[in-house]
Image 1 (cartoon, rainbow, N blue to C red):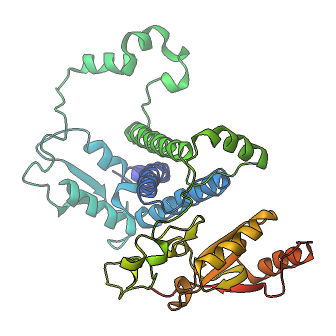
Image 2: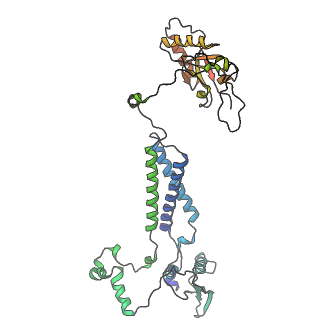
Image 3: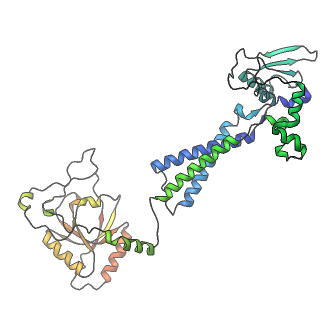
Length: 393
């Protein structure tokens, strides 16, 4: 290689190869992330978060691509030297690259350093030829075939046979018949680009990875963790399922014999146990109440504070029953629960109206509406807002 053909030994960054490698690697990492998310549910998918998932997918792909690009841009794979790539296509006992002394400006030239590194890595020899045509051995070729089985044997051909091949090119008969009339992309490339790398493998890996990601996305969409529907759809679904509903038990047997006091919590326990009180035996034959007295476990599934409208505090099941029936008769929805579920002590029974509210403001508004209603025979003076917070477990 002389100074006039020095481009044969000067590396060029393979930006396209780096780009396609980055796409393939980012696609594989994206598919892996999708599999992990499908298994561990880092980001739950529902019909309100499709655009959010799409944005996160694009962001993750871009981050993976950018990280690979920044890390890999200085890899040897992306520093293309034509002479080296040409040598790597063929097998020989020894392969030498000979350079004129004026090809590089000094031994510290970055292109010369890269050429030496690739020669060492591939087992090629390197010679420098000075102005007097004296040679200096810079690197000797490898004594062993370090690419055993990775290069093909090329048979020696006669000069005439080589000429025929050049005329026919890689498309054989058709090249000879149509010659230059073939489209440019079908004609044999005899330029320096014929030793460039292709991107078919990277494209295949990218398509496969994106397909796998799309399949996982479709699986998540078919079974979302949450689905937002309109009130009309909700009423229709509830109507369809009305015949399959199992009515809730009207009473809990021997409820009066349960204390609802928590025993000492063990490390492996995630709940409170309901222990029979000392009067269990005496009350075991008693008639169970004909209304629902909710156990404490129903109120341990929420976190933080809730607020409810307290309509009374009673010491006995009989008094609770009378008050509850009065409220039901005027169209309200009361429910009863023991005070020990929240205070940790006490056997009183608290009567609540309506539902649990997430904030005190919501409960105050609901209480205000109730107090404005005309409720015959009902004393609303002692109705208050009660904060509910299960004891720490």
